[in-house]
Image (tube, rainbow, N blue to C red; front, side, top):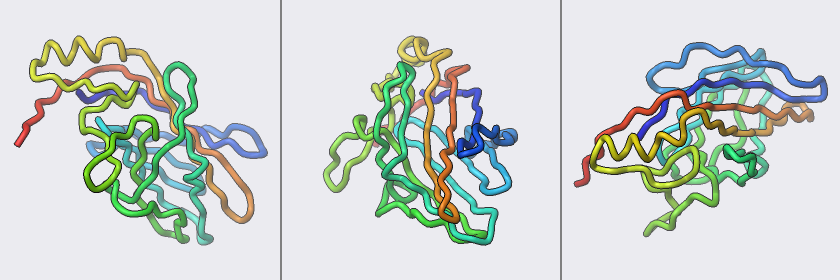
Length: 184
């Protein structure tokens, strides 16, 4: 099951909340947004959240991934597991001036132990961490229907020039897109 989202983003710093400019997402992202400091592309998919951050300034910025959080639809705050792109290696935490990094995120409580590493199942719901894969389209739609209208947030603290900001990304489920999964 995949989802269609309505999304919004803000930066929170000492000056308060600053809405980020949101552009139309492409095929590779559910949210594309930015401000004068950074550009973000976020793809929320079953079993993972892929985050691409581009530093638009000349000075490096630090992603405070150990402080990143996930707010589920009920308002519970969950720690986020962060890794490099594809859930491999350690996550990059410094984005050089003019540079881009890719990070894999997923709520820590929703990870399953794999043989070689901690990894989510590919069919886990980004709304509640439950498994929603079913072989029949109607059954998958029925399992996902309670997710319609529910929202979750991803919170990513960033430090630049000794000042901290928090970027908040909100996703509300508008539609369901059942997908066929081929098992090898």
